[in-house]
Length: 345
Image (cartoon, rainbow, N blue to C red):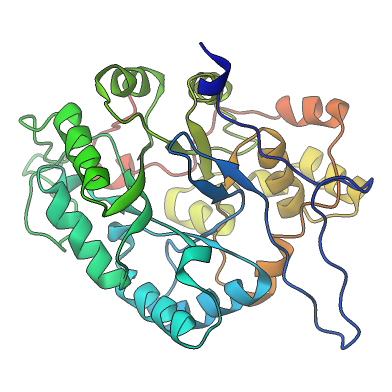
C-alpha cells in the first residue's frame, strides 16, 4: 500500500505549546471560538476533526443549537435524512449564511442516504439538498449497508414485514448503490462520498468495486466498543474513520437500547479526574488520539464548548493502554431492537 493511500492522521494540539490549543478568553469575559483541526480526506477535501451530530435533536431546538455551535467554533455538522430534521437544519444554516454568522464554504455538511432509498440515490440526495437549502454536500454517506423496500422519497419508516422482520430488498446490491453515489460526485452534487456502519468485509468489497473509493466510514466507536481491527483496516486503505456515538450514547442510548455508558466506567472517571477533564472530554480526546473524527451529539448549549475543549492535553501512552483494557465489544446503538433482525450478524 503506497504511503499516499494511508489515511492521514488528525493533527492535534497538546498542553506543551504544540499544534492547536483553545484560544484564551478575551478581556470582555466572552470566550473565543475553538476551531478544531481538520483531516484531509482521500477526495482531497478537508473535514474538521470534531463535528456536531444532530440525531435526536428536537426540531424546535435545532436553530438555537446550530447557531450556538457555530459561535463556539463548530464547522462540521452531521445530519441524516432519517433524523427527519434536515429542513430545520437547512433553515438554521440559511439564516447563518444570510446574517454573516458563517460562510457556506467554511462549513462541512454531511447527510446520509436512508435504507429505503438505495434504488433512488439521486432523487434522495436532491431531496436532502432541498431541505438543507444547499447547492452541494461536503459528504454523503450510505447510512446502513442494507437496502429495504422503497416506499417514497422522504418516507423513513423502517418497513417491517408480517413476520416482524425488516423487509430487506434483495434485488438492490450495495455495488449498484455505490455506483449511484459516484454519479453524485460526477454531477457536482456531492464533494465526497462514504459509507457508514460497514464492517471489514463490506468495506473491502466496496474498495474492490469502487471507481471513487469511500472517503469515510462512519461507525460506532467508543472505549466500550473500540473496533481496533476495523479502524486499522480503514486507515490502512486511506478511509477516514468517523466515530458516531463517540461518548457511548450516554443516558439516551441507555434508555433507548438498554446499553451501558462508558462515561460511568471507573477507569474513565479516574483518568478524567487525573487530567482535570470531564469523562466526556477524556473519551473524545481518546477518539482523536486514535486518529478518528468524532461527532458528539448534545442538546445542551453549555455542552457545546465542553466538547471542543479537547485540544489542550494529551493522554499518555500508558493511559491509552489503560483505556484499551476497558473494551467490552459493546454496541450501544442496536437497531435490531426495532428491525427484528441483527444486520451486523
